[in-house]
Amino acid sequence: MAPFRIGKLFHLTPLVDDLVAAEAFFTGVFAPLTFYRGYSSHWHRNASLMAVADAVIEPLQPLAPDGDGPGTSWYRYMARFGPRVHNVALYGTGLDELGRRLDEHGVRHTDAGVATTLFIHPKDSPGMIEFSDPGAFRGADPRFSPHWDVFAADYWPNGHPLGLRHLSHTTIVVTDVEAAVRFYTDLLDARTLPDQAGAEGGRSRFVVVGEGTVLELAQPAGPGRLADELARAGESVTGVTFRVGDAEAAARHVEERVEMKVTLTDGRAAVDAASTWGCEYAFSDRALEGDPRG
Image 1: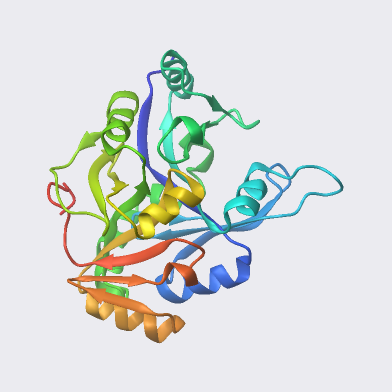
Image 2: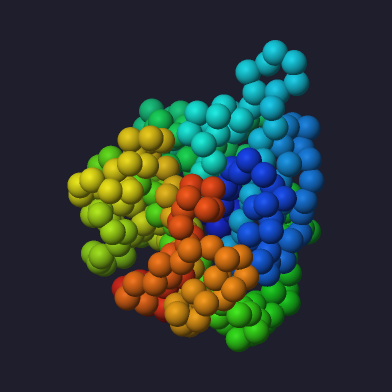
């Protein structure tokens, strides 16, 4: 059995009710490199894969079931909770070993009918986490290209209007932040960053999973958006923050390109989540303490 190892972030999956509108937003703001767009009969959905700096965003529109069937899990999830980020997908090898490790801890998981994929059951983990073997995607994902690092080091921070450095972190609202940290460190070999301030209205801890994917685990400290999202959809992704060179310049770019409300506070520009399918997309010019990427 091959040893389990987590690689880089594969993608974030915002479920949307209008793929064309979502593509207009992501294209207008991020000018991504779109390397896939199509329909999957297995998943019964339309989706795109868009490379942005060191990350990939997969806006996905679940389709209504044909006939009287119950619909896919994505379709049922969005019907219940509305548009929002469904899961964080990571590249990983040795998924059989991961499955054995999860079984030992009583954590449910499934391959959803795809041998190279493993989904951890959302009720057994802080946020829905997916793992995919990178072998099937090396020819498609541009970040595996031998030329990508040279291109990315110049284009995203210097040639892109947002001045993108990297995906800073993804915020997951949780019920118990210390239990969530133990899940990621004990089962997924995550590393913790120093204690520091995080999402407004919450107590946060930051963990690094695999090759540089930083997750903010945020427990609501009182009433507010975090508490509302936890009550509505349980432990789930509520925000995605990119590191930029200048948050004020990033705010101007977003407002000019998509005419959405942007709130600028203390070096952080945030787009109104009500306009962006239930997820707050933000741009910060401050590095997380302890982040090895700077």
